[in-house]
Image (tube, rainbow, N blue to C red; front, side, top):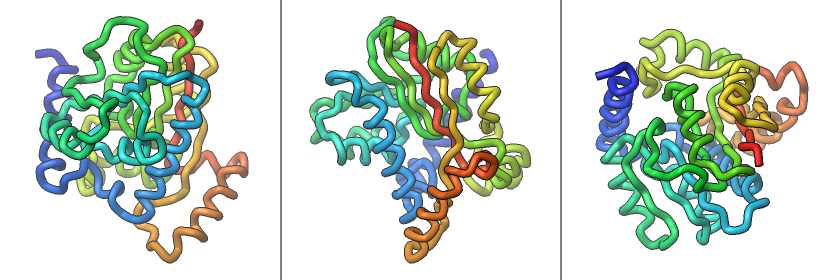
Length: 250
């Protein structure tokens, strides 16, 4: 068994356990601030794919559908297939979204998607690439995309102090539901990896100062302040996440 196979098995066991224990794959998806973050990501994704006419969207690391829910709330007619290595997560997602006839969920890993080449307009995900072998997963995304298709991911920013601590000090990361295999990204390094994988129009942008633990009464204030901080060139570099966008050449 090679390193990637071992890694997939560890991730599967980890997310199976979370789905079994909590019904979600991350506690931060269930808080008021966490829900606002998911909603924002869904809006950004739908804006990014609005240039396509009825696109096929593949969602990597869909989990139990924490992000999918917001995408479908905003566009219930989207054609979407979600993938995850966790059978328990996929089982939960199928049960949650069975009323959506153009949505499907399948067990698969990001290195061997069950599709032919050049089939999808978009590949999306939230907090998934940092769990993977980046080179292999980006090449697989590139393979299944149609020429002119695009990717959109939200990933943790290694320039953020909390992210840097939890990704590099594993005993702390485990307390926050991290696995030992996951990491975070410096945006310039990730941009280079995207270009090396063949993508063009690469854009990796720091954003998101909304922490999931923000109390509900403070969310409007923190949200407004966060949007302001995202507009300040140096300060935005320590935001919590990165928007990752790129296109497959036509």
